[in-house]
Every structure is written in structure tokens, then in C-alpha cells.
Picture 1: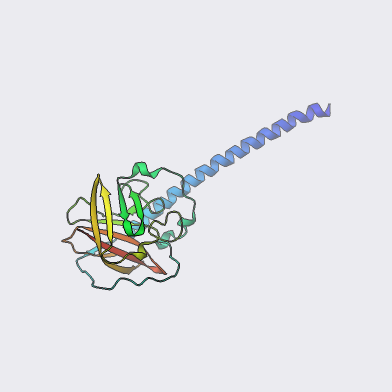
Picture 2: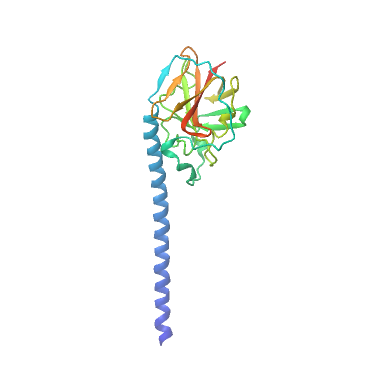
Length: 224
């Protein structure tokens, strides 16, 4: 008699546990999705504050920043911890509208439209407002990316670049070749100054300065 009573109780207990585990899994997935949405919103807010761009005509004649062997810092202060967070497995390539290629670094990485939800440094390289796309004459195409050692540190090797190195943007099936003409640093104080020649069509790359968590390095490249 006891066995007949206990068996249904065991089945009920197992059923409750299965339901509980299922709820936990669904809750976890929902939480993770919301967490990444919050991260994206934080980045959008941060970059809208960061790119208070003064598009200066000043061109500084300076030597290329000396390389050193210190570890790279994360790209930008507000999102320092994000690169250590697992990134959802998504096929971003179907959202890409173009690619950045830097032969010296063996780098080729796609970018999305500015308003795409995956246009975010925690997922891809990010096209920064108020960028002009490469097909605009005398425009400035601005891209930011993480340095560091995480899976999204696409700009981890930018510090190896020197003046006269090449970068190529492929957009709408057309290749645009640029030559680096200026490299300088700027404080992470929410006010980024881009020093370029407004008579040139330019590409601007932004990432954290190697060995210095308080500054970012800006690479100015001009169209051939």
C-alpha cells in the first residue's frame, strides 16, 4: 500500500522540478537578452556624449606614437567590463553593409548601418554618428572598436599602425583606399576632437591607447 501511495508522489515531485527548471531556463534567457539590450543602450548613450566632435582643420605634424609592451586597455571607460561578458552567437554578416580592411594587421571586419541595433562596439566595430559614408566627397567616416584581449577586441592591433599604412573601406560594392596621415591621442573626457583636413575625404579610427586607460588614440586616414 505504501508503494502505491509513494509512486504518484514521486512523479508529482519530478514533474514540479521539471517545470521549475524550465521556468529558470526561460527566465535566464530573458534576463540575458535584456542585459545585452541595456548594454547596447548604455553604449549608444555613451557615444552620443563622447562624440561631441569638433571637426578641426588643424593637422598636427607629429611622430607616430611609440609602441610599448604593456597590456592593452579596454576601448572606452563606461564599458570597461562589457568585453568580458559572453556575446550572443549571431550571424552579424547578414546585416553588414560594408567592410573595413587593414592589410598590415590582417584585419577584415564588417560594419552595419548606423541605426542598426548591432552597430555597437560590444558586437562589431561601430560606425559613429555623425559619420559620412565613404561615397561622400570630403566626408569623414568614423569607426570605433575595442582593443584588449576579448572576442570583440577587433582593434587590438591598431597600435601597430604607422603613418602611410593603408586601410580600405568596401561599401556598396566599391573599394575606397585610405592612407594614414595622422595619429594622436585625446583624453577620455567626453569631448573628442577630430583633427583632419576638411578638403580631404577621410577615415577616422578610434580605440583605447595602448598602456593608457585615460586616453584614446585617433587614426586619421585620407583617400588616395
